[in-house]
Image (cartoon, rainbow, N blue to C red; front, side, top):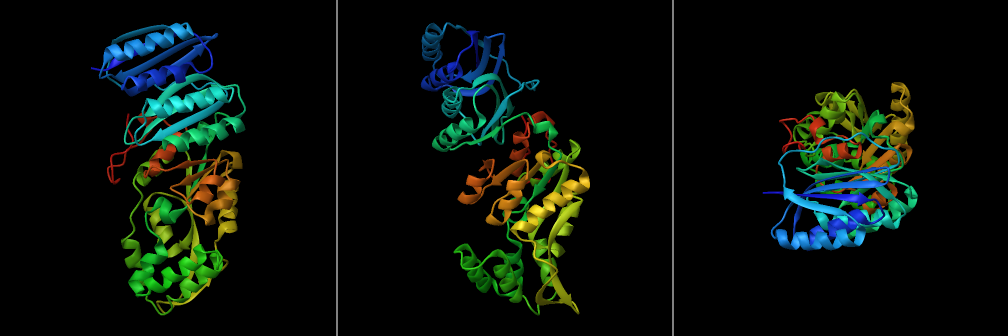
Length: 395
């Protein structure tokens, strides 16, 4: 049976970290956590699964004596957490497939080190990813982000810091397609249908090595498709695999009233029907030239490259009347850097190191709906889609 740990007493920096360290030292598994500070008095509740209640009690008693806390242990109830009203200040979201006391102790310790104080904690989700949200008062957000990057890297978790409570003010989410919304690279699927996969891969390798920019590499690869029937595009589209959680992400965002858009360096013949199938109204991609039902090996119009993606984000935001600070951009590659920089919140999804370094935050779990928790969405609000590859996030 779970054990409910109830801590109360005067607030101070590092208390949460000390309690979590004691929980981890006792070998207990953290199931739930909730914290509130009112007029300088702390209330911290933890639901844990303890293998040794005596060791847990001893560790917490030591912390209580050191910190002037009242600590009690009692049989814990089952059930999910209750979403809490937000408080002002920085919002820190911590997320991983498994999230125990040790990484949370490191995160809360880093918050204290930065000069911040935790005013509220709530669990957003327990599975298939675990996510906690910390409302932090005081401290410098830039310093907070810096120290949390180290703590996150040391424990293999994702940490996001937002300077203010913008989660509910996000109104537009723009997604890259290849290796973000879908698990595939569209041009590689088309090349496989045409029989020039190796040649396309060689050009891609040159681009990755910095020998070609995006437009040069795209035009060189498209030239290899000359003479292929349009049916090759349809065959490639039929093989697309959505990223786990993609349907749930889009469905939930739509239900919450947000606008969703996709921008891609791929081809509109594939991207537009994909977007329409998900109910996405805005879709932009490159256009292949077709004559008499066959690809010419050329493109129509300007190439949608790194700068073009950022322009599309701004265009869609203007069309929807959304300020840039209320936009989110999600991508994985160098071609997404400009739109990630332009958005109010830039998210690197299973991205290259350079993109992770440039983005406001990164998500390394292989579920796209994990992005919802960066927006403050609670698991109870997630609109599960039965067609997703795995069960959508629920508490």
